[in-house]
Each structure stands twice: as structure tokens, then as C-alpha cells.
Image (tube, rainbow, N blue to C red; front, side, top):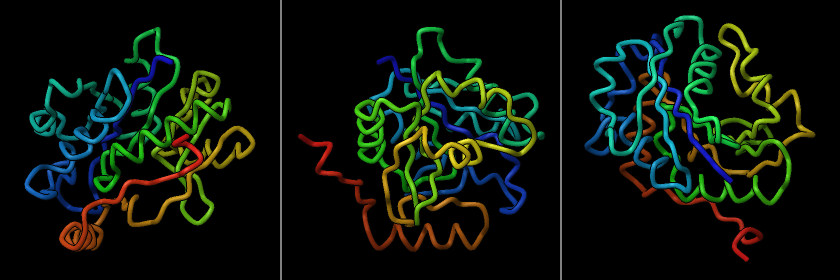
Length: 209
């Protein structure tokens, strides 16, 4: 199955007060950390969607690991990033792995488990879930792309996933694996977590057979 990946990193970082894409995570920027993990997973084309301060952030993206697309309407919210990313994918793409650019604790191992879960389920989507709530990272095939492309404003992938529980399978994980870094407090939590442990891959013995 032809699989691409979108990393959504176009936001204005308004709650952080500085570009969170460029925050240091273990000696490299947050966006570079996420790109490296996604590129190491079982996907082909990797697209990073940028918006605010795109030229500055793009320097941190390794062109051997991913290509950059600019969401010109990024100020609208996440919907614009999704539309720009999906429009940039090759026509042969059958499904897309969507990861947020502010989830630096996500590992390639977790993403590979999620990809296998989606393929074996036969459902249109697969997503990780915390406390029963599905959220990115998620894998979505073309059966759901039209709904994503129709989103407006700051409505994103979470709303679509939660509106259609019958169309997806989920992979429960711990909150520490999906830390979204939106505020200085989140960043402090991230630094503390990174200092005390290496990110643990998600495991599901049902998928290893």
C-alpha cells in the first residue's frame, strides 16, 4: 500500500511565545526530531507543512528526509494545513500518516505499529488513543480524505476521528508518548521526560505475529 506522511507544523506558536518548531529537544530542533522519527517509519514520501516563519523553520528540515510545503492560509488554522498537505501528495498515494509537529515523543516504532494496525483492520482510519479518545498520530486512507479536505477554520483531524468511531481502529497509548508541546509548561514537562527516560515504543503483541 502506497503510504505517505504529513507532519503538520504550520502554527503560530502563540501560546509558547516563540517558534516551538525550533525548540531544542535533546540537541536538535523539535521539528527535526519529529521528521527523523517519521522518516524512519514505514512510509514513503514525507511532507512537512509549514506556515508561520516558514523560511526559518524550513532550514531545520533535512531535505533528505522530507520535503516542505507551505500552507499559505495557515492563519486560518489546522484545516488549511491539512488541505495544503493532502494536495501535495502524489496521485498514487493510498493512505496518509498524519503526525503533529509538536509531538516529539512519538517514535517510529509506535508509528509502524499504527500503520500495521490500519492495514490489518480494513477500516478507513487508525489512530492512537489516550483515555479512550482518538487523536493524531493517525492513518487515514482515501475514503476519508474528502471530509478532511472540506474542513474549515481551526477544526482538524481530531474532530473527524471522534465523529466517526465506527470508521477507525485505535491503539491505546500513554499520555507521555503524545505530549503536545503548546506552552512553556509543556516544554518543561518534555525536557523532564526526555531527561528521565528514552521514549518507549508502543507494543501490541497481536500485531507482531
